[in-house]
Length: 368
Length: 253
Image (cartoon, rainbow over all chains, first blue to last red; front, side, top):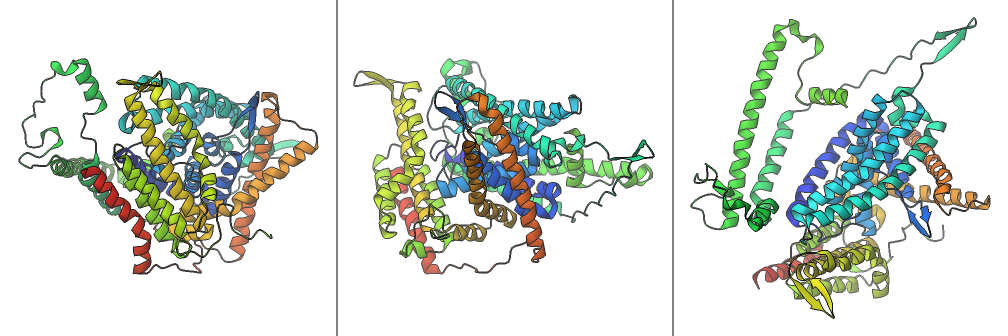
């Protein structure tokens, strides 16, 4: 599954690189919550485990054998953030040291095998654990289903990337059928191994399995022949998160978008995109009329009166980002003002003061 | 212990390439690969020139050709995939020795083969001339997040330990008469993987405690700061710059 150099073109590689970098940045923040200050040694050792586990051969039949990919296993054993980090580090080292997977395709590889598998597996796992009865067997079953679906999900993502930025024109249907077909088979193997491994860990150290944390039975003491709930240990107070300025995030995002829009779009393909091509080939676009904005100065991602398709495209991109950011900030600012005024109205909001990122994260956790 | 403390991919030497600071080499390889990938595939001579450039670097680094080629075997799976392409791609067809092949598929196969091989060769040269510890320092100098570099360094340091642990478990299994032949043996292998995870995790906890007792407070002390002079940067960037010249020629011709 490691994609080599030259398989996906530069714009798509750059875009997936940005996605992968963002996911890793989010995971670096999130993993401190999962592992606190033990992050570096523990995540490093788990990454070493994933690396070793990928070398463990599982014989299938007649001399063939398969091995683990490890995304789903990492997500269930150590949590999604640490899982993304571990798999990404493994991929980085494999690419730099072992030349396994191209350097320019690192973004594609991390997005596919690190982010998509881990996130898909963890969402399915969480959902199933919520639905199934709270027993150990249901954790194993959920692990099976999560790993089973995570591998074809990565294959589907790869097919999407290939459609946008692939360097050969193999028909979309062929790639999709081949990739998803093969990876469904791989997914069955992955699911069996993952479920067996998770089951083995749960049997010995259930406290180590991140996905089984809700299943611990409260400690009970036998006092005078009767079972009495022991006093719960005082939960450690969560470390106060340092106040972070949303300005920095905002400026970085703006900078990245401008660079992408202005410069990377220079290299973007000037051919019509896939949908447009299909439309031209099949004659669908005969009836298509130009957009009602077709003759305004920024139509078709170019700036009127500026010669040179690339320069004009880049400039249009920069202007587009500017307009989008202005509109987005305006909406965000308006919503925040309304919320603030609403909150101050109802008795100063019982400690639920609106924080730009913190609020969103805690709500995301509740929904997962 | 007699084998030294370098990883298997490193080839000890004192060539000018070995002496370059690691972050210069990393940046040079990355730029080189980006240039190679953005070259139009129709300019076949450009890829030959890239190969000559890499050959020159390998010569300066005194890496034998056999060593380099053996390491490059890692890309064999993609060669198989690339060979498949001309048969499944669509578009106009051409007859080669009685077999109908797709023209765009042939171009695609050539594209992946040429660019993938050059990328693998560049990575192999980097790994065989740079020590692991240096590589990590280089990644840190290139402003990778320190936490990520720490995780990577723990993974590399303990990767061999965990792999050896797995090997000992395999020897223990086999000395008790275990023979893995099919799916029926997966249960045992799954239990082994689970045990390996527990051992790795517990080792991580012990390592953390050992670090705490030696005064670890979230960041590793920097013992040897690597710096690069202007001349070293110039020497390292000679490769991607000459590649860029070839690439620009490829676009204009």
